[in-house]
Length: 516
Image (cartoon, rainbow, N blue to C red):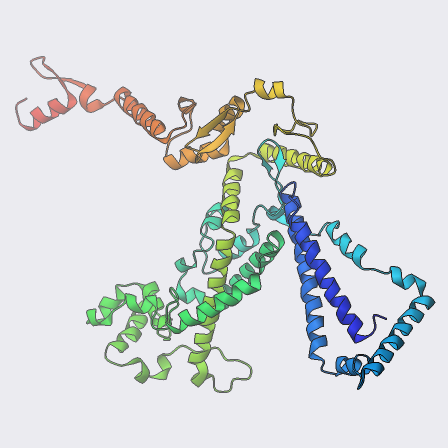
């Protein structure tokens, strides 16, 4: 009976209501941990996708392009008189009863159980490399995968490109979104465009896997509408269509000779020529002469032989006349990709901070320490999967022991795990218990903080957590070392002919004055 158009419409509306109730019921449940919260978001996302697909079917039914719905309504739900209408009603009712009499199992068919299964299934989320790393947090709680970004492929692509510079991986993560440092001449290359495409592909995929309820398409649609207005007004940083940074840097009115332009150097001349669409090759002298032509000749009247060739498309037979439009479209496309990348970096700002901290932490660990930490994380992950199946009563929120159960309260008090120690050098990080506090002076976070202050992390600075105290002690140590050093000007002794003793500085001054 569900094969009729009206029955299909009713069933679709029923499915929509059931999916909405299930999504609300799922969101009202409090997840036990971060991984459960991520699975919950993916389940709700799957329900929303089903709602969208079912709504599309309903819209198609109501549009009624083949007039099937209209014909069915005219056949079964309309009649010239009320008596004929009731006759149609009872005929329809008889058909339904006969159908269910012939098919007794049809009345028990329901999609409720199918939708209930959506709340029980565990979504499949694929993470690779560092973004599937499962770190420890607190007293043994395990955070969900997707905590860090895996930017190693993009990092290798960056440092091996013409627009990239050699740097450490941690430094690359810190300046990942700073595209304004890249030269305009490098931004217009195919290599840079492919690099941006790879960035957008990875960040969009990562955002969908870690925050599935974020509507990336809606964010990009709003971003594109704002970008169009800003591009029309020339208000896009370093990409405005009114003028570029390179054009504003060199004012030809201040130069009266070609030799003065030569002193600017080949790179700056190349950037200025590329910004004006001129050929940027040749020696420094040739570049300066080509740029100096604009001092007395407008760009529109300049000979075409001085202009750079514009890439041709397959179906473009008049590339010379359309070259400027092609170049503007390419600049606009790359600028839009940069804006999208920066917006994604803003949404994932906390993840970038954690990724940078993790990269700096790895620089301070030895291979044995990294292996031990990885084994500990694997054991902790197995413990978490077992704990998810059973609810552990822990009202005092005690730390978990090696067996996955809360440690005894007396042990908690013995180690002083309820006592909090804060370290200003570590960024006001809290450490619970005396043991963790003493151990943190040798860990990567404290070492990194001392390195930022320019102070060696020696035993002299144990138990010091204040930045001012650390700086004051370092000044005293430097002053003490300065007094104990051998200073030949003051401590080396000299004797004159009369037997008088002088230090080196005094003896040299008297000798220059001719008094000795």
